[in-house]
Length: 278
Image 1 (tube, one colour):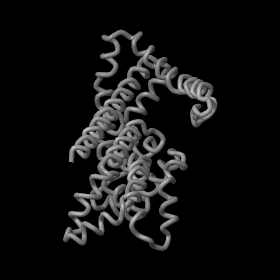
Image 2: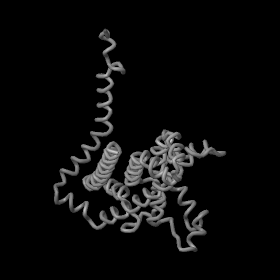
Image 3: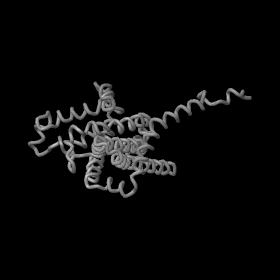
């Protein structure tokens, strides 16, 4: 018969730890979001719509979402490839490359933006060769997409990498012994296993790209209607002390990120249900 103490939770002081966690969440996350939403609600629907549907705001949506989508596609391709290389191959410098994946997390984004300008400007290391070919990166939407790619690719790699490591090698060997090709093994065994993590990494990459600021302001040129992103327009409204307008634009960014995460979770849930049925 179990004693009373053995029936307690694994973590002692659950009530206290839960209370501290909820307090931290309320102060750090909930209150700022509620304050922003309160500012937006006080505008009234007509004023709110006027701000978020202005020609300049719509241009920033188009530029930001387009660049974030391109960055997510690049991250989806090269992130999975890099995760595959790090997991499946052993080569000199592998540990160094694995550590470098987290560099965008540790590096200040402003420093990343300056580095990208140094590399892709008209007289930069790569820019001096690309621009004569008609490929202009700095101060264009392409430069914005590259900055977003640099800062968000670790999300794809770090979500896919541990799942790849957990894929049992004996299952692949069994499939190979039954005559399956490498492509069939990947499509039928590996891809279904990493798909939920892949979707999660891509959604985090997209959401991170939507809010990127520091790495973009240096390489974009910040030209209204051409290379101005949503986060920069919010900063400009704050600099003008137009807090309601900044809150309204930030609310659009927040809703977009939540919708993206909701769609992603729905896809993951459907994929898991499909895998269970099969």
